[in-house]
Image 1 (cartoon, one colour):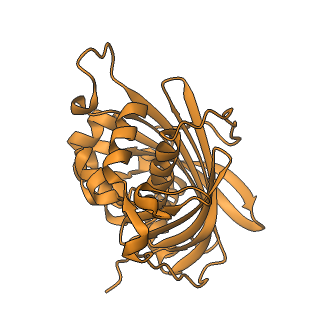
Image 2: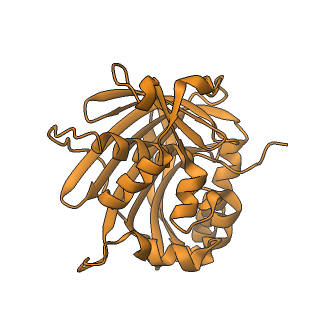
Length: 290
């Protein structure tokens, strides 16, 4: 049975992990800058029926978007740590309920063929071979989540519907205004998610802080047309070197746009004999970069 939650978080994590793997390959190209909004947390002021309607719309948006089953998606991500910035841009198609996807990601002037199947990331960089001469690498996002002390769903599905619905209250949502995105009329909201109310919130708060700033743009049918998440992730204590003077951290901004709802998605894992497992290397790279 298909879950009714909208599972797109794995894409964001996939782009991060892929960028980290690329960074570990020693590409010293000049970082690009990404346009887009800065981090914005919701105002705690406001109330009344308009506020309640906005909260209800935001809480319902993930289910309404998932009802479309699939969509075309673009993603823009900026990752900054230790004075370095990595940007990536992607486009492709996604199964909104299951989280599987087929995308092309451009990061550090490299074009990456990417698939996410059952929360396992697969990537192929033209002209670049993985260990053993394999054309594909894979990163198990579930193992990444476990290493970071978070549950699989928290990493693989930061937009999980039920958890966000419980964590968002009237004081957490502020209506910004109306905007057009890809020709669609949308209503723009700023949202501040109380991390402590999410599953595993105590552990998440140590790495993300008390609140998770988000911005969402909903169309006239209440579906998500754009979601922006800005977060600062602190490395867990186990990932820090003994001589670390201060907590290591990684700043990440992710903007995802959705269109062409109902489009066909065919996400299949590459043949096993063409894939090298780089999960451990990605985890090590993530600790070095974060």
